[in-house]
Image (cartoon, rainbow, N blue to C red; front, side, top):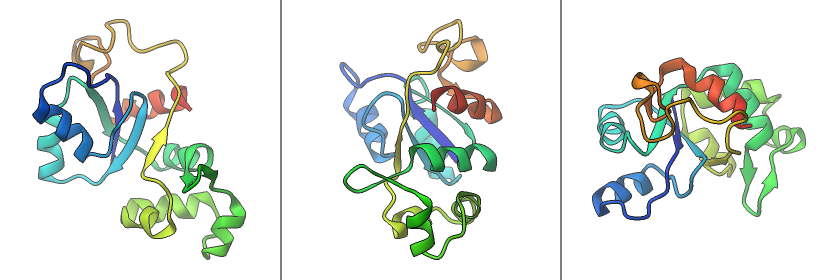
Length: 153
């Protein structure tokens, strides 16, 4: 499962790139969405790679993300009482279910966008315009995305 974070805004961006960003469910900087791996998603990510960063999220980070940043309609926080009403024991169980299939969040009414802060101590030295492979922050970063998410929560 990919965690995708938007790094840059959409002002003065080509229309096709802007539409691709919207189709992924990203609307603002520092927002995160979860997507299952598929050939279509990979092509979309490759197309807008200079505006986002993405990688494989692990279960521990996903659990913490759901605890701290998951929201319901009306900006209500997801808490244990809500999970108990929906017959889910804890956030770890919810994270395991999300890993198995992404539709769990939609069925529970949890928003698919997680609003994060800018990362503590900033992005990598090269800035958000360079790719991660060349010392920047944009593009594919495999499991290093987990450290970035921890700094942004």
